[in-house]
Image (cartoon, rainbow, N blue to C red; front, side, top):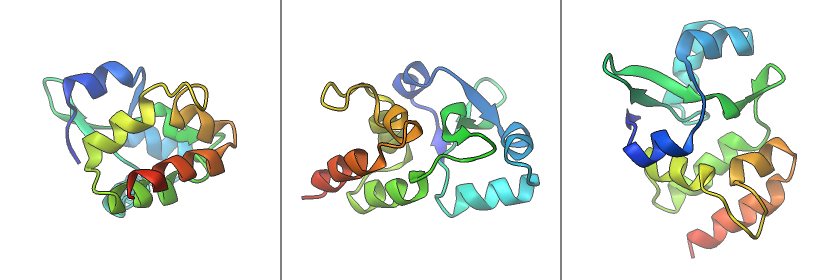
Length: 121
């Protein structure tokens, strides 16, 4: 977790604070911090007050988007830090189409994971 790079802040249109993520997932703040620590979710510090925030797109229907934790692991194995992973997840890819996170939200995780695995080669 780091301070959000300016380009990441531009790519990610909506962020949730840790308490907001906890409410959306129906868990406590400690669980959300654990998900971030375990890299099941990515977060960045944002704004003047350095508030820990998670992209809102990572939460869907009261749960972490299906396939996201595994994809974060694949990106980490490919050498991506949190900012690079966030940048990759939210950068439009014409071959998908859309962004990798949109594809995950639309249950097209296999395509996204395949692209992420190719990055490690």
